[in-house]
Image (spheres, helix red, strand yellow):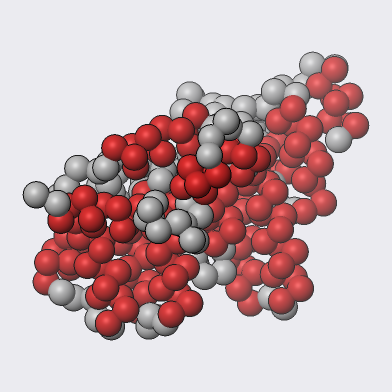
Length: 285
């Protein structure tokens, strides 16, 4: 980090990419855990996650091949699947801290291409990467492709497909519902791709628990969201970036409203979760 600071004092361009691989200093700093202090120092000194590549201004800070500052994290998390538990835990911890730094400075983890999309990776592996998925959602990540919309990929469809392919169990369903709550709390309007709507209407998804989850998801596209849901989305957006917990606790609100904002519904019968509240709202005349 001190060397980075020294170079900047002597006029080094923090956003310049190399001529061969188009790697920026941020890209290189997000490749290994040992470089995390350099990543933090680069961002503190003004490195932008939306820098242009050598071919011209690119608002997504992506190369022609689609790489971004999140690409090394996607690669590391993919490789950690075959690692030992200790190595996987260390990799996930580094990726969490790096993603936190990048999202706090405006990086978009939900943009295309899909193979370089950190949000999509976490949705597909929500069982292993739920903590990172929560960070991304609470930092303002879109629950679908931020460039092309849900017609490219939709978090709702990804979750249901993963449960349908791998089998749905109690723990997985609870974690999937928590992931759905996070996505719903990040978007005032729920957009579902046409393919998912066809699957819902045709009853393609099997398993009693999964069918129940699908039944609670169906009204979201065809009914207006409750006012309290829209208020929660607005307040949570105002409090971004992550972490929201300490910011919500500092608000002059009753404890039950704080729990509602934090999606903590345990013991709050009069404040059902987003999926429940939408289902009740849709059933009213």
